[in-house]
Length: 554
Ligand code: ARG
Image 1 (tube, rainbow, N blue to C red):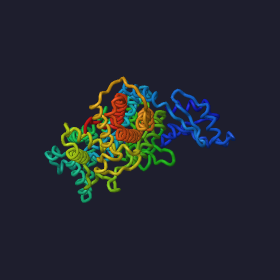
Image 2 (spheres, rainbow, N blue to C red; image 1 turned 120 degrees about the vertical axis):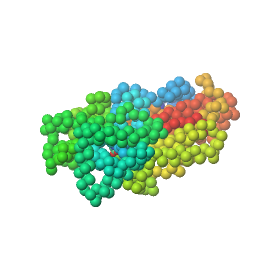
Image 3 (cartoon, rainbow, N blue to C red; image 1 turned 45 degrees about the vertical axis):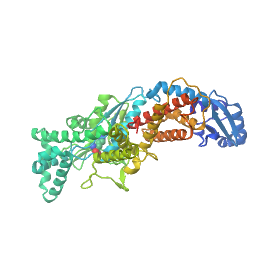
Image 4 (cartoon, rainbow, N blue to C red; image 1 turned 45 degrees about the horizontal axis):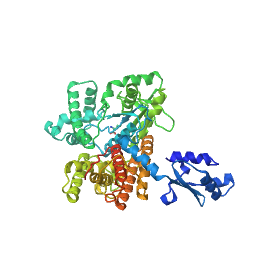
């Protein structure tokens, strides 16, 4: 709509207009759009008042009801009835497909997300990566891309030599079976404590990793087992979050695929020796990228280079996204630059999507040493709290545990996604679960409320609109903005735009429903039901794009 109006304005404007110049007044009494003419006065040598009058006098467009010049502004009022009628028919016909586009032209986008490390707790950072990455994937899909979600499991590196050593010395099989990650983490911590007293342990650890790299059967079997047990634990979290992956190729998968990369670097003359290690030198301000240690061991960056090349070969992506915390920015800058120096122009299609920390009481929520926050517990707490709220507020509700899960998990997802991902976010279960304020449950509740009205009214596709009042109009205007919001969120890889949009639409709907007698005004009921149905379609789709469930009753 904004684009149409802008075009109409351009045909009568003596000056080149830009999209940002056309405002949406906060108070719709001042119109649906307003063009302030003050910036044009100097160039045109006319008063803003005159310019506004001239533009308003000649502006016409089928969607414009009237244009009024007021104190140097052109205030534009739209044809509410016609616009509403067209829009509601469109939403009801397209249903969940409303807002979709083919912009991506089926281009493949690989998304590296979640990527936890085996034998270590699934951290808050991994949660953010999973939640943000999943939503980005859904947004890209809605815009016509083909997302490929890759869980690049951290299952390789010298730490596994230490873990094997620790397990062989002190491990108990039954404990690992019962609580794999907790037990393995304890073993790993113990290894470090004992190695401080007896440094020869480190040599044993190194030897064990070497054996693993060389394919020693016993070492491999143990490592496989740690991996299987860890993945089982991660799977419980993915099930709760409703997230799936297209590939689990992690670091170990690239163990035997690094030599060609190192060779290519060598052939292209990029590999230089530095203090016994092999590195690629980068732009001045960026430290060199470490490819091989002095003992010949490969590194995190080496594996990421092999993985990037493999992804390009396998998927021929148009874009390759890595949803990983801020603290790894340097690493991705290095990987990208190395690929660029190798002559791969697609290095420009690699995008690191960084995010901030989750804080509690202003401090980083940590999984190190004693302060383990086991994510599963956090999720379970949220669900329990949601369950308690339901028992208080709606004790007769059917499928209580299903709804509690949708609300508890939705609350966590939403509180993560509603702020721009670059910000650190404060973790507070109580606030997340409130039904007032900008929360997941607030949006879910608005949607459930809309459904409960629809259960009482008959929805039909034939309706006539007499008048669109201010409350209805605010809601309609937001519904109209959904497609462009989806597009922007995908372009900017920013799910928070959808979360904010969902809050705005919920607020508009709540204020409409609070101020208009929907069920008792029979003449307007068909039209209003169509409006409410459209709200549920768009709210449900917004929540889906955030990875949330949208219960119809709560
Ligand atoms: N496993 C890593 C970690 O937990 C994250 C991996 C991110 N992805 C990548 N391709 N490097 O820190």
